[in-house]
Amino acid sequence: MLELTQWQFLKHIIFRPFEGYEDLRWKKSGSMAISWGIVVLLFLERFFYERFYGFQYYASYDKIFNIIPLFFQSFILFLMWVIANWAMCTLFDGEGTVKRIFVNSAYALVPFIVSSFIGIFLSHFLIMEEYVFIQIIGVVGFAWSLLLMISGIKTVHQFGIWKTLSLMLLTLIAMVAMLFLIILLLTLFQQMLIFVLSIYTELSYRIRV
Image (cartoon, rainbow, N blue to C red; front, side, top):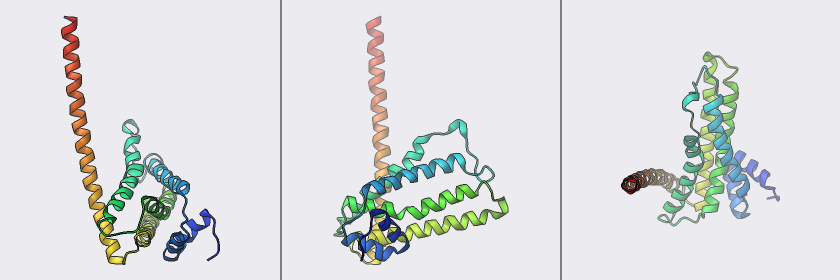
């Protein structure tokens, strides 16, 4: 194939996923800068959805708004997907590296992000009876990204379709396990911090007395 720039590769993958990911693999191309930019756009999509979605469809609670869950829904979940997929691929003898999984997965998110931004924009102009158009755009974007994700994971590990789907399912299960461990560690850390602070408070009180 002709030499493509990094942005042309991204367009090539979005519209020709099976051929595009294979070309990306053989050319050993793919930009980490573009991939990180896509993940940042995923974070912005979550932010705009929470803050600027049409009020007739979604009520935003300004008094309890917190950016931490949005950071988790974008950056943390995506990194968990990459790490879990890399960890699980070792059980299946996959060929993917962390970088290749990161790039392929990030590129696959583009249709979902674009369709979501389109939905956010249309939510300010369409009436409730026309909400079905936003839903159709959202479903198409999600399905397109899912197809790209399957194609990207299949190519990066050189698996068949059923082995790819099994790996993706195990990746989701591994993400749940990782999330459980993270919550457990944070809980233990919180309890330890409370214990240390209580000892410090007690010692400070006795010294003053």
